[in-house]
Length: 321
Image 1 (cartoon, rainbow, N blue to C red):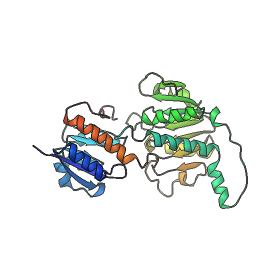
Image 2: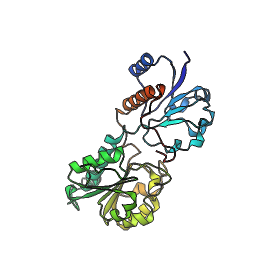
Image 3: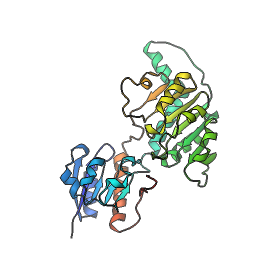
Image 4: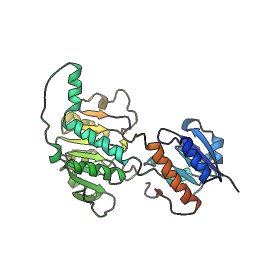
């Protein structure tokens, strides 16, 4: 039996444990599995691999002469979405879509509640033992949220936002049937008309050449006075200079940023020092369940790959997601 060289790269979102490696060996003895930590794999290991799970450096893929399938542990695949990176033009690229929606949605709702209830202000007041109360500018259950992107993450945010009584608006690339936890669903062509209605605008769309700078200076100017921007996707989706200006002018009340451009921001960047900005280190998708969920996707896809069946989360190189 020909052995299928398989390279598993350990990282924070994918780290198969002993029981998972045993399951892999029992079900698929034809695999010759090499496990390496993501930063320390060798070019020789990559060059031999037919299957890779993890985040190889895009520039190293030129050496992956036998690679036919790359499974990423991330939902976004922007760094691998250019087919020219791969020597095998029939390459299969699959993502971990479906792994991160719930925890990222919790992160978004946490930001909304924290802004609405002045948690960040009260935290600063604790440092000086200052006692002052504030009324929210509006109640969450009377607020409108606009989701830019309606994949796994957007749908999970919508479910939680609707449970809090919010009016939920969403835009996506192509129209589909509206689920009951969304009040209004549109294509991105309607985005300009919706921005002025939303108290919270959430960027949760895939990063592609078409969505880069989707919230440019003009569209940030269309956002509702006193609204908030929350970005749990990629920093390049929003014009950061225009965002800084809108926050300084008071046109926007605040921003919750789990994604910036670059990451991390340089120490001198003004967003670090703004009291109405909350920055998290691209951590919204982190969960103790991540590595096991990614392994389950890989394990299911492995069976499909070996049997020539359609694979889960297969990336369309034309759409780049």
